[in-house]
Length: 335
Ligand code: PEP
Ligand code: MN
Image (cartoon, rainbow, N blue to C red; front, side):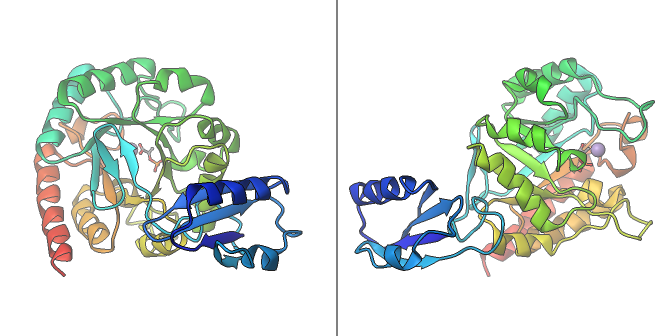
């Protein structure tokens, strides 16, 4: 349930109302927007007298929310959320570009790629240190050393770093990581999500291979229910019957999520297609349909990459993508 307050309501009145609601056993979420303040009521609202709340002097309207996700719901928080990441952000007017290798392979490799993607306009450096591989015999990542190498590249370039966590027991290794990625395979690892909810780190939550948007939002809700509202959603393709592409990019997820949630949404055209030459057209389409950013795999030597070489762009190809994406964004802003 949400209560939209009249404009001009002061902090003392908001505090009084929220204390009264909390005394009824509810959790209260306050969102101060540019026009109105919205109070979200979380918990069992079945016994709450909506008409009584609506009759209060400072309340403009009361609505029940039928969707099972509350904190992530745009009705709770009408303005777009902007997630601050170091000296940059995701959401609002900033178009985030996260780029880097599928996996960190050595300090030299990640340093060279970090400098190249920064020059080409990336706002963050991505790189996998813990890799979720389909086969246990494939390269599993450099783990703690991989994170160290990313931190060295961050020191050198100033780019915030994004890297994937697979096990909550590794959280202490992620202290200096700027954005913690939850990969598609762990989107419904609820124990991991709950632990991430106790941190205040930005979380990049990727949609599962076979998950609906509602399930994605419920996973975001797990993190938010623990108190961490710094979530970036990522559409990275879903499994369909098509085999020419690794996955099928669900671009309609962007405008649909935009309606449903205030959280920013980015697109990963690399895992969505699995084919380097398809990354540019999908990146342009993502920018055109209103995504808040991109995550793109870039490798200095894709043919010899230890993971996902076929979908990795060279630094030059990546620079060409960012150049064209900026043209699309400019055209949209002039619209
Ligand atoms: C990745 O980003 O490196 C990755 C493994 O992606 P996904 O979880 O989307 O497959
Ligand atoms: Mn990859």
